[in-house]
Image (cartoon, rainbow, N blue to C red; front, side):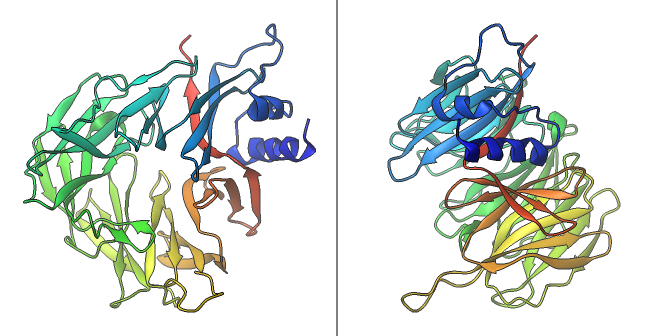
Length: 374
């Protein structure tokens, strides 16, 4: 067993706070070799992805957190891996087919999110609990369509969103737990829907699924910038330009009271920002910033990570500028730490927000946990 991998798994167990990964899972992650069949099985599996962007290949690992039993699915053509309910959904970029893979090794075309020449699937987003999904498609005339469903297809319906005139498209931003509210960009320009290396949204709207009403949000439309929503849809947070080319204010909109306020930008004049995440309570946020691409040979683009204390209305530099594009995935450990992803390598990190300690906890991308049927 590799001591390095063993150490990674011990760190991962601590970093994910509550996942019972044992040291001997290393062999399963590296080789896919199961542990002893008589070992006790956990009622859940932890899901990892290891990608080779150069070859377009990937391996999905479903790892039993107690026994070390592992199911490994090799994918020869896949990206955009997303945990949805009890499976991993991904796209085959060569033909656009949407697939799903299960912990028992099954792999199949997705039965209700289907890509075709008549309606191509463009984007999707899951609810924070991963029990439901929203996706958009664009038909042959360039008209956008938005749909939602539970992970296995229950409550499937198309949302009556008025589509923008082509070439603008609808792009999903967030779906709340319980499928109560859907947030979307109503005016996404496919060729310019980015903020440097980050995805951005031009005009965020809310659709209330309970009473079938649309709601205009304060400050929209804005810059093509990041957005995040709490799991219950009570708080929407947006990045906005403080001047023409960064840094970025953080606009907070409390949809319960219809009040909004702005947290002033930090003193870092980086032109790009994105990958915005919120904690469940809506008290903390984090986002990534990036410098302009290097103008001279030998220089590297610089990245940093911002932490936002919404309660005290302050932005703080959480990671100093450097050559790695760290992106926040979620808050963990009772909001005392952030799970981060190296956008280039796909490896997983933990950032302790109390002391600033940054630890690489896995060479793989951690997607989350799937609870197995009893």
